[in-house]
Image (cartoon, rainbow over all chains, first blue to last red; front, side, top):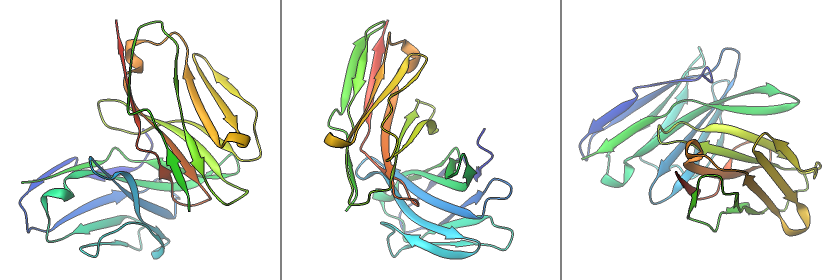
Length: 114
Length: 112
């Protein structure tokens, strides 16, 4: 158990809808990363937040947005969903381990868009 | 730009065979980190190893070993005497300090 929690575990929705994925980082970790794992694109970095502020952006679509709240939990919002958004979404939080800012991955949220 | 290539999409072996998973990376930085993760059928990402660019020593952990060669930009992973439980997707990843850049993964199937 990494200490990172993600809810829900599974989500099934229809095209055009909007969903919110939630991530609670490990206690004390200030950074949260979101990754998407899809059949087409593989595992790719979407966005990073550090202590409430956006720190880095990867291949995140404009239909997707994220935020990190004062209690450090993060939400990834996906809107105008398309079939191709079906994927496993991972959240990771980072903290220092052996002199390195280690990322700890949550169990993922599996999104199915029908 | 950073890039990780895992040329082997799928590998099938029989139990007790040794198997090597290849990973080639590209980066312009002199300081970077390389990783291997395992993703079993249950879907979670299991951390296996992290190596920094200044440490080219090979590492062995039980049946697992890793060979890091900066000269060829490779970080290969060998499983000795494979077991059915090793069946999974294995990802190689690169980081220059923040986000991880993953390869496409190699699906390893070990049959009994």
